[in-house]
Length: 146
Image 1 (cartoon, rainbow, N blue to C red):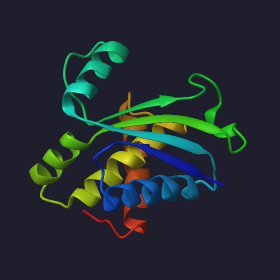
Image 2 (tube, helix red, strand yellow; image 1 turned 90 degrees about the vertical axis):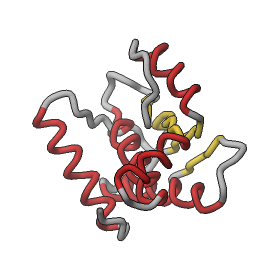
Image 3 (cartoon, rainbow, N blue to C red; image 1 turned 135 degrees about the vertical axis):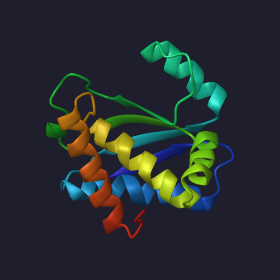
Image 4 (cartoon, rainbow, N blue to C red; image 1 turned 90 degrees about the horizontal axis):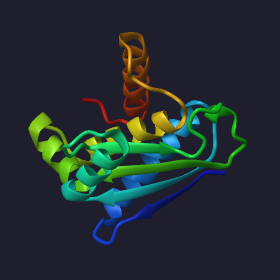
């Protein structure tokens, strides 16, 4: 069974449902289970986290913190997978920039973060192609095509 906890004082029910559905869809794609904590923040908070944890002095849209980074994450038997931090502010800015719904952008960022928790990355072109293909498949299956 998968549990998704969302920490945010100002997220509406629609955003909460999108995030829960997207993380569960990503896990179901791999027939995996696990628990995920999603923290919704503003640009200032994610900027500080990005600087502290990655040494990058700017806001970003999503950060992932796997519970067992460096280990075989996908082998966890339905345990805690980790934290995903999403800038709700940046998500809505990007939805407008890209010309799609807030729902689609939140789902994209959640799927992206969940894939990181499962051990996927995009440091090389091959990794990026694989991860972005998976994101597209999962979002398409959710009916959230670009």
